Length: 130
Image (tube, rainbow, N blue to C red):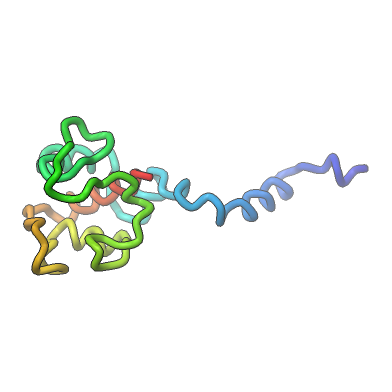
């Protein structure tokens, strides 16, 4: 019966590796978001507030962000495409935030004049929205 009682670090690692593919959205937690975007969710929420993104979008966790012009950004991390145009990847999202008309000239979203750093931070926050 030693096998049944053996639950050391190796067994736990095996269970984790088996469960990893089922964790999908859990992998969008802040440390992983920061690594994938090069930004900070904490700074990102401040960029989003200061830029006034909530005047056009409804954004969870951002006070008074209940705009109806653009799409709601709820569950952004689970979306497949950005603006229905490009795959939802960190690099595409940063480009979209920096200059939406460069990706979709017909978009209603204007270029907001954000730096790459600000775009990375805003992207990091959006990827925390499951």
